[in-house]
Image 1: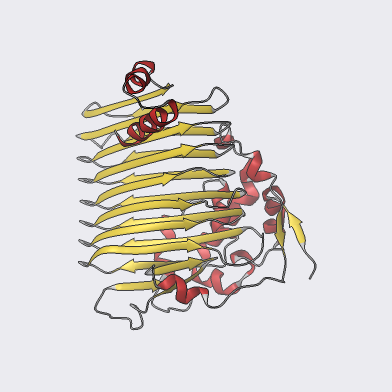
Image 2: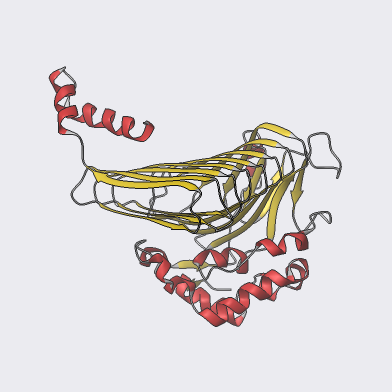
Length: 402
């Protein structure tokens, strides 16, 4: 097979025609999640190309739309990579394949961690189908064009103090990668989860579902590794569903890339607590876009969203945060804040907070700022012998941490 060059725009037609070897035309995966496959495929046909969605109006989406992906059957992979990675990580997810250190060799195990994959008959993927709804966003390809769902389940009443997951791609090609992941945290379990996205030169699309069951606690720390990956593009859509009494603490740090997109949808039920903290330091021509939609569906819950971004050189940043509070979601506390430090006149920083409140019995607030360095603070530091570059770096560090 010769190389095939295509863009995300072309992918819409390729999936539609069944050209790609994906879930839609693979009977194995269609049997695993038939409703999801039909739902997403029909939405794609009815609503058209997701890349044309007005959702992306501030996100410089053309960088991702026009990127040339190269599909080839001549791919090289070093089979020793698994051993190297499993020394540092508990679970690795590589181009839709999943492997762990061996915690899950038996169905019932002492650690209480179970891999979800097509190779495990106990994965019970059909039970997850009701949680997936098409969005007509590019992340829908993370399902339709993936090799199938993978993930892991923490059983009820288990504790993991330092569970580490690495998303990587060791194929020596420049094809588009679509990854479909399910993370299921069992009732009354407590998990500290560290995620590393080791990005490649090219485009990766992730669609990740997190289920935080009744009384469970998830502390999630997400980092991106862009070292030497100047052409890296990532579209990551994370959906969190918090069942009654659950807790979520999510922190993400990144430096942007040619195109980076973090889309977070939260569905929050009664008596939950939620914290979303994002810090981004952009430079060169880096692009970082973040969208956070917090939906309070039941009473007695709280949420805090705090996202801070530094824009230098010719970087581009956009943030859209939305708080939705349903009529029955009384006694809700919600706060949304976005702060931006624009240290270059050539940088672009866009911020758009939104509120949709349908009940009076709430405490809700939001705020956004775009500013430059405080000249008084710079003068104070320089008057005490700190040079200009060191002063600016110190203020950047303080901005991201305070």
